[in-house]
Image (tube, rainbow, N blue to C red; front, top):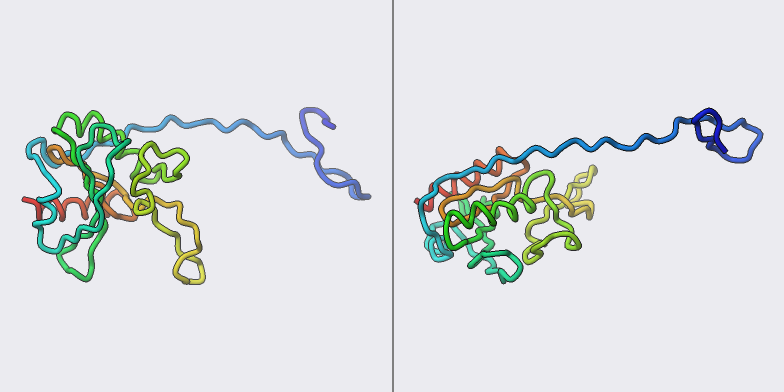
Length: 185
């Protein structure tokens, strides 16, 4: 039942029904383009460069089927202090141009507050478990079971490399990216 553009809600009781405004369709704000953080257009990196780094621990090599144009992808940990390391995902492309034109699109999908981390919609879901972070419970327990937050706050491009970096936000992630990139030099 409706009256003057309002929908009547409530139960059949002796209390009169309350009139509430009909829901208005949500207005979708246009998404802003993310800035591409390019450390360098030069350089050809491989997983061997990471394995040679002091304090880098390689955890996994990923199957890149489905990660368009990628030659290789790895997941590991790095930090100046071996007991305080951050997580990284490094994706290697044939050249800088491919990293920019193809790799950035996949990196945007997997990083930041708008990251797509549901396997049903992720274009490349290899390593998806490592790209998720879990939210803390308000009581301070390990986590609440809500593991739908992106672990990687942002990424950088360096030569043929797209590097996804752990961080609670873009600034923290970029700081971690810069630390690892400096060690690669």
